[in-house]
Length: 173
Image (cartoon, rainbow, N blue to C red):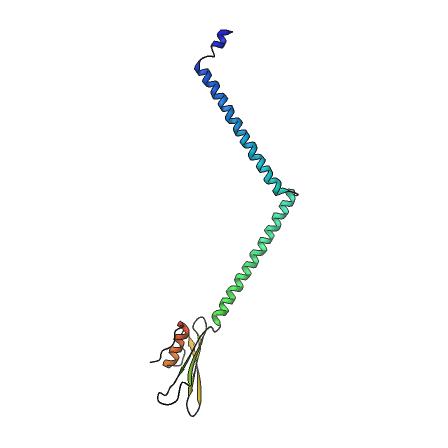
């Protein structure tokens, strides 16, 4: 029997036994790590499922999905309304300019005027008033994309339209 025990006394056998013990220690540490991770996961699940079972959770998720679909539909409707409002805004008058001037250099004062009323596409009308001793005359001319319609524009009218489009003060030469 002593010979049998002495047969195990070689360094290879001791090395193999050491490797086995080291492997068992590593496996033991790995099992402890898994145990701790499992315990943390159970705590999180307990908080998540507290007072509920799987059917309740499924019901909640389906309700949330329904609410999300309803909100998506409402967002789409609001987007369409926003586009319609943008289109209406482009059609409404929001570019204006006013120029007062004296058509007769030696006589009178700045009683005559031009008003440009344009939409988002620079279309609309320009109103001109010429004041004289005999009376006041008012003219309205269409403006299409910042240009004259079928009627020629005066320099004052062109300048007023440019001011409305670009936001600059008109200059008459």
